[in-house]
Structures are given as C-alpha cells and as structure tokens.
Length: 531
Figure 1 (cartoon, rainbow, N blue to C red):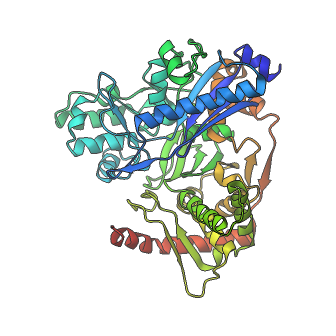
Figure 2: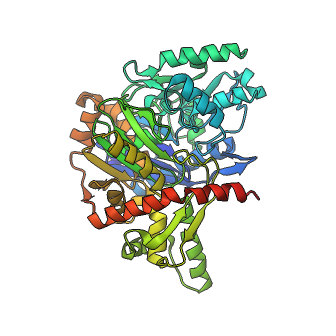
Figure 3: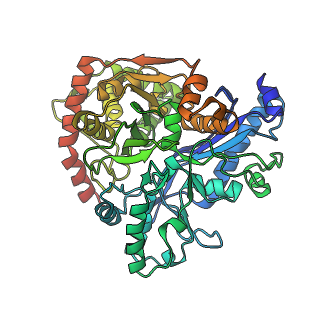
C-alpha cells in the first residue's frame, strides 16, 4: 500500500521528539519506512543560572513541528492528516517539571543540563546505595526539599518533558519505563519504581514535614506495547492548530531520548549497545547481569521494556564543536565565500581524517555546562595546546570530534575494561555520525570495537519513537519488542560497519590520557573564569 493510502486510512505511526536543539516529527508505516518528517529548531536559555525552555517555547515548538510535518504530508501526498494508527512522544530525559493541583508550573523547567543538585544527588546515592546522577528528576526534587523552596509544599505532579506533553495530549499522568528510569531508580523485575528506595525516601520526606509521598507525585510507569491513553479533543487542538487531527488516536508510553535511541539502533536486547552523539552524548549497554560495584560515572536505566542498562552519559557533546564551525562560516562570509553549513560540516569533518591519531597534542573540552562523569559542576569551553603541538586544521577538528566522545569514553572504559561487560554490537546514531565514515570511525577507535550505523541513523530518536508507536498499533503480534525490531523493522535495513584501526585506537588512548590529566586545567578555568 502506498504512503498516500496509508495516511488516508490512518495506518501510519507518528513519533515526535523534543531534543535539545531540534524538535522533530517522523511519520512511518508499520514497518518503519519513513513517510514524512517535520522540524522546529530551538535552543535552551540560561536564565538566573538555570538551563531552561519556557512553556511558551515548548508549546509553540511542538505545534510548529507538527505543522511542518502536516505541510510536508500535504505537499508530498496531497492529503491532510486526520487519523493515525498511534502517536508517541519522546524528549530529552531527566530534568524537573513540577505542577500544583491546578496544573500550574510551579518553577521554571530545569533541563538535564543543570548540575545544581550535587548535595541531593550525593545524599540520595548514599541513602539508596545506588548512583543518583545530578540531572535525574528525583535529585532536582530532593534538592528543592533541601533548599526549603516554597513551591515544594504545593507539589502535586513532578515529571519529565515527554510525560508533560503526553499529559497535554491525553490527560494521563504516565511515563515509559525508560524515561522513568531517569526519574527514580527502577526495579526491572517489578517494572516499576523501586519500592524499597521509595520507602526510604518517603521516611526522609515525612521527617521534613511534607505530607505527600514520592510515588503519589510521580507519573505511573508503563512499558512498550501498552496503550497509554488516547488523544483527547483538547489534545488534538493543542497539537494541530489546523483543527484537522481527530481525537481518539492511541498513544504509546512517552519515552526518553535514550530509550528511543536504543530502539532506533535495535539495541534493546542484552549484549547490545549504542552511542547517541549530538548536543549531549551517551552510551548505553544492555546488561546480562548487575554491575559488581557502584560507580558515580555510570547510570543504571532501562530499555523501553525494562531490561537493565548501564549508561555513560555526558552532558556535553557537539555544541562547542558546532560553535567553531559557525566561526568558520563567519570567516567564509567575511571572505565572500558562499558556504552551505551542511557542506562546511562535511568538509571539516572529513578533513579531520588527515589529522594525527592522537590529535597532534591538541586538547579541547566542549563543556558548555557541568559534566557529571568528570565531576565538574560548571562549564567553561576550553581549547589548549603545547607550544610544539601540530596545530593544523585537521588536528583542530579531530580534537573537537574526539572530545565530543571524551567523557563518555571514561564511563565506557569502566564498563568494558573494569567490569568486563560483554557487548556484541555497538550502533552509532545522532548528528555526530551524519558525515559518513568520520564520527563512526572515531567511535570505533574509542571503544576498540566495530561500530555500525544504520541507514536510518540520521532519523534517530524521533524515528525510534515512531517505531514504538507502530509497535503499539500493529507490532505486538510479532512478539516481544526485540522480536518486532529484529524480524520486522530491521529485517531489510542496511547499514555500514567500520572496524577499529589499531593506530587510531592507540591514538585515542593517548588523547584520553591527556584529556584526563588536563581536567585540572578545566577545573581551574571554572574557578577563575567567573565573570
């Protein structure tokens, strides 16, 4: 059946993901083939020391994204979207959105990028004997408790961005288990928040004089394949300003971008892994068993079906790199050279392959914000070199591409070298891999393992969310999510695999040694550059 007829029949799946720099919608058939896309670019703001997006930006952004998708469908197929088989909402994980009983946002949305929760994260980690990262929702909530913030006594609902949008569309306070794993620790056997840890925290909360229980203010946990509500009349009007989208469309559980990345790379079964590299960068490996030790550098989350996953998450990825490319674009404009940004990225990335395997002694930290893995709570982008370093354009770009994986590699080294975690497949996806054969090659060097990028990798998380919606609409007949992905979605998908080059593996190890040693300079920059 062609795309036009599928859309007319309402047999298409829609995934919308609110990423850090772009909101993207992807419409697919039930086999994962892309029918249409839509975009809205945005950027977070640093307001009173908090990285945030306003509600107006969130609402305008998702409507604009859907509108762009709708127009793409109309131009491509000559039809209007009225019905869909299922919808799924995903977004950047973690962060803090707190509402009162009337649904009023009590304090500005705090994104995953904020690292002002160290006291709470440390106390909770000790209480639970389980690593609680600074960006997790429960760390934000408990930090507000510790700080005695006035709004905490009025809290009725605390959630993530994906769950908030889902509630606007369906009226239901739910969250997918993968996104929930960035809210509060998950019991993968019960497929719910860890009951023992809830009890411990409730005792602490009660002792501080609050009359709500943690589980009462958090969204209900759901897993992939469950119906998480249907689009209400209000939700349809909220999403589609044209008024054509009909109510009653099923929605799958809202997910975080880590979960959709796992789906987008067919990395939901044990011994599979993926690296999502863009504004933030994170690596995820689905475990066969628990880790032997607790590591503050490693987050324990889950797949969209609840399998335990070890995550090495870096707040900072390619943002500083993108800024440098923007500077080169300014130079081109100054010289009267017409340079398309996509072409500029491609040429600079590809030219980096001519650099030295160890970046010639150049060192960079793209820390726009704090970095949990390296225990640095504020960001100061930094570029440094020794006097005798090979200061070439190729090495300059290569150092910024390497450093986009730098913090994540430190976490992966713990898993692969110290814990001996086994992984059969590593997949790469996200903007870092858009230029063929560059980011993929550097990741292979970082992990010393083959790295595969599927042809759908550029669609990334939004496509993965559409696939989760398709699983709800038509996939459960194929069995478990991993069976649906392997036997149906990825059965005919093609991709490329790059094996690690021994010289680049050695070079990346040298760069990592310098990266680790140079952290003292980054910390000094945070301490001294306080203007």
